Image 1 (cartoon, rainbow, N blue to C red):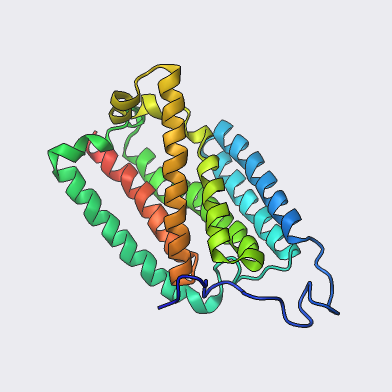
Image 2: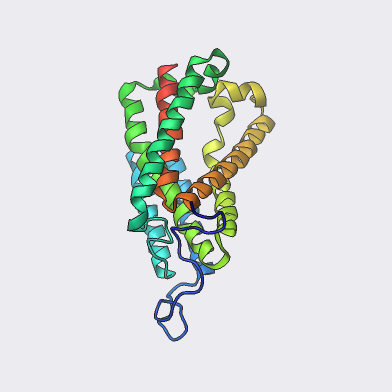
Length: 258
């Protein structure tokens, strides 16, 4: 089992001679701090565009942002291992992803069957959806428009860049904080969309602001869990699997219980 303080899927320590950035070797076109700043700028632009565009346009924006972020990592001298995508870790990551998906399915099944927790799945956004709409979200929009970008960005590129110079703990902290802030725009209507949250926060502007703040804190904490999964498994596939299961199966169960 990997230790708590080292990510088996990321490079550690100074780069060896001959690698980009090593003394006497070719210089990296982009320093780590500049790369982090550029990655954050790419994410900020993508966040605004995805919030304004939905459907296929949003998915294409996410895919373009993923390509740009991986390009930033490469310019900074990063590797596939830094992004959690080293070939030798993919099988292990896939096993983690399958196990976590099964665990989430069991938790959701229990929550759907218990009257005390069934209301947590209610969401007014399901009112205008049919089965095809939900299938499109579960199989396309969530994995390609949400999970791929967010995991590549926060547990892949940003985590890898920071871990190279400050270690996995700093990488987890920076990644999780930015992951929480990423959810400000998507959370603006949260208090009114979900009846369970409307009961807690109310429908006032102050309640909406509190709901957004709670969403930021919750997703930052979730980001820390996803970083721990990436570190433990050594692969980006493990947090990808959990992320898809929570979001995708959540859509499916919420629709079935509407």
